[in-house]
Image 1 (cartoon, rainbow, N blue to C red):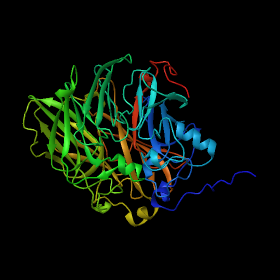
Image 2 (image 1 turned 180 degrees about the horizontal axis):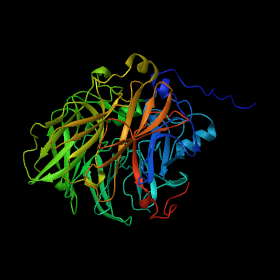
Image 3 (image 1 turned 90 degrees about the vertical axis):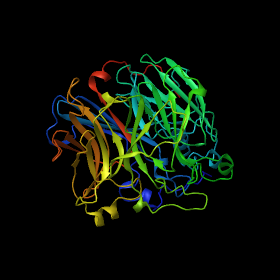
Image 4 (image 1 turned 120 degrees about the horizontal axis):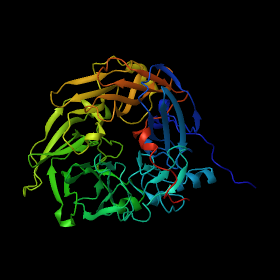
Length: 503
């Protein structure tokens, strides 16, 4: 008798409902409908990735970002847009597709799985282009390499055997001058270990720096920042306990009783003893905006919340904030890397708005800058919340506006996409190679809760009052996490399919 398999039906939890209902779509659509005009000088591809479970999860009330990595590519050429969508063929994805049912258990807890995986990842957090390959990243494992043209999965990628860490950041930083890829992994020797491995890869793909560190706490380090001479590791007070995991508990638990640590390490020729762990009051650091050096000090800009943003992982007593009360404002920490006093002075607020997903003109990464772009929740904007709230489903806090902050003046310019729309993370496209900082376009996915379909909006940074173009998709894409713009000239430099390990 044939084995009886569970029906392919997702739960009615918010993270699987409304706009967040799994898409489970792979395919191609050429010549997407464009309302407006895309300037002909925009040539390249916008890549983004979303968690999208191919099958109902093994754990019923699974966090929304535990889904399989699904990569979108929007290729723009001569004012036209071609769309491609593919899943990352991870070990998890392929084994579950063969079994026709979910096999992986709780988020980052291998002790709750139905089977043992060699490499347990969904590759669903960021999609980065480096040396002719797309790297689908999630911070619990090495990345998966993909063909940037076809989105074929080439295999788990360990930089031709050079990767020393079991994990790899979801936010590697590409130096705009040296073209080095600056990276790290935390829990780098395995689940529950305090080890951090910092490493740097030169433009040819060769490892040039490797430093092993020990974190003051075993906790989440989702993003980090890079200056010309330092790397900085902001630690989120979501802590890991291996015994809790073995008992079937969560990988993460909020700890309100520890400081907000920021590790500072020299970027080159460093050793483990060179790291300094600066301390600030307990807080939840968001994605880093940028960092740079000025007058011997390090400036670190990032959103900060005084509450546990990942409220679905409460503290040991089960306490969690009301998600409607969680906000993050942009702050600047000023750090003296030579100081022996590790208590940081209070950070300065740069923007008193509820923001996340800050981005910059990437040509200014690690250098002094004046323009920051972000997703923000504008309480004064006329979003039709009574209807949108019923249709959005569960997920990341909703953002209804894209903002552009001039750090030299404090002026905030906003783009509002409409009363039935929410925005996702933006990317910046410079108008030309040598144009001034921030002079170009913003490109980002938009959720349309009227049509229940997705759109991509293109906005000129010099006039954010209305979009240059709206690109309409014939499908609905769930909330994604991160993406990047890759210029056509850069894509044409490399031959794909080189150096990946096939599985």
